[in-house]
Length: 431
Image (tube, rainbow, N blue to C red; front, side, top):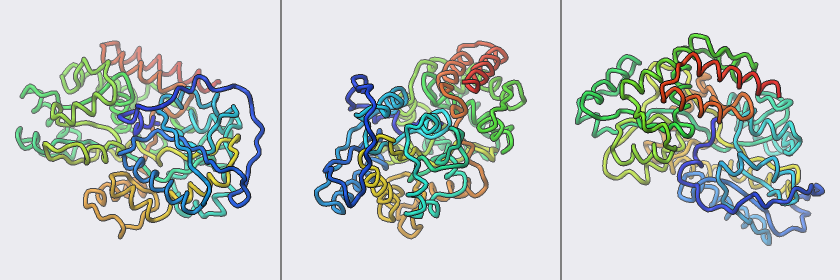
């Protein structure tokens, strides 16, 4: 999971409806980069044009067209939600693009791979040496065996990473005499200070992924790597264990205490971002995909980030994947485009625009805050501190988690909510 978030924010705009896509299955006829008679490479992604990925990938398109005279990239902006809901249908049609950005994890890329809708990229990985750049738990979300991530053939390639953090308003911290917390106790003490001053400390949103991230961060505070593996990969989650029980109880308590506004239960991720950007809330917990947006849009106050106090594990992984549909008519050209996004200049552009590249040269990163962002990610990666996202284990679990966190915020008992999650998880595993 997590849902990529980068997209569900402001990028939403623009797309043409996918509903009209034909259901007919086309023949596969792949071509090669050198021998293709096609003059068009159809490319879809869902990043905002002014985001780090949007800027870097637009440059990659220019370089691709320079490298392949006579070939035009036909880019179409989509939304995250569109592709989440319609990808199996559209990729099984003659209207499939040649390459697209898609969410990683068992419930998304893994499911498409299992259904035979994605191209096995293992040959291209060896040819281009991508496995030298994409390693460790970043590579885990690229490889799937029977739809389960972690090993087997490569079905997707990320060119950036992401991780969860706490964004904070430095001016508000100074105004209310709050220091950056380094322990969980200091974190809650800081929130108490803001509540006493009549300020809601945490921006959140219950109608989309943000509230899930609070719940998952709280669970991770009592978890270890084995817990993550049991939940994410082995299909053996126990939603009545200490981690989940503590997380659900604490999240409900935070709403009661006013750490999180109860009326945020119906708000979306963009509302959360706006609450932080406007200076309404001094803190916001979410992923690095917000970083570039805040760098370009926040002008009225100083801000920075810190990792969730006390946690060795945080939500995070390699970024969303470039995948090549089985019905791509220009698979080799698509592979060459992926390789361009992994070149040093594109990787440096990602970093200096506020994203976390997977293969940038450190000397190419000129922005001091970008250096810190990348260093934090590398530290988490080196310590196996990236715990993926809570909605990954089974198809459809994102909606289950959204409903569950909304129930907690509305006062439903944690025990009842966790029982519902256990049932949904078990049902998803059986599908």
